[in-house]
Amino acid sequence: MGTSAMETLIRKRRTIRQFNGKRLTKETILQLLDAAVWAPVHSRKEPWRFILFMEEGRKQFSDAVLYTFSKEERERWAEKLEKDYCDSMQAHLLVVIDADPRQRVWEDAVGAASALIQNIQLLAWEQEIGVVWKTNEYNFDPDFYARTGVRTGERIIGTLHLGYFDSNKVPKPRPRTPVHQLLTYISSAEQSQQQ
Image (cartoon, rainbow, N blue to C red; front, side, top):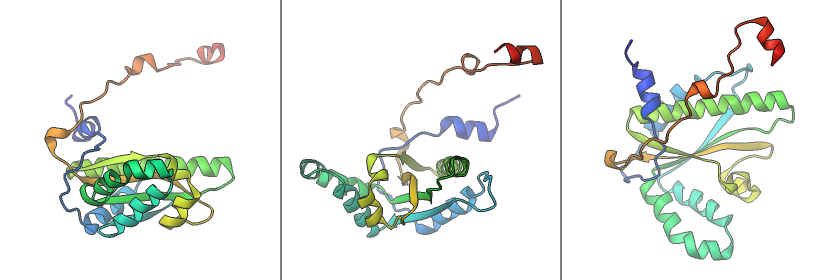
């Protein structure tokens, strides 16, 4: 049995951190999201919403990140951050969910949103669009929330930076642990009671 197109896509996808600045359209992002929202959801209500920064809006995103830095960090990183976030990266997407205090509801929402983000990454890769999924400190900063439109009672599950990339700059794959080293296999009732 040969490798399926889906398996090939999963194995070849990489996190992209170097973007080439080629223009990405809002319509393309919306198409990705329209397909990605078909991720598995355990509740009747989809748990996510999105905040998208493109074109001149990228400056608002860049400034919000910069605002979370110390004065020294701002002086050191301001120029590079603006170049990366406002020139080479074409879109910044916040995936946001409600911060539900009920553990099961919260975990279901985080799981569903994570599956959605994986869908975005795979769909984007298929169109030669790179994605880096960030969970940096600013994703938890109340000032960043206020400056990016995240509402009270919401949490950011991931910040996605998107853009086109040069195929000769795709990172090499990192090895994965063979599954047989991670798998506990139970084939009888007796085995499960012993473990």
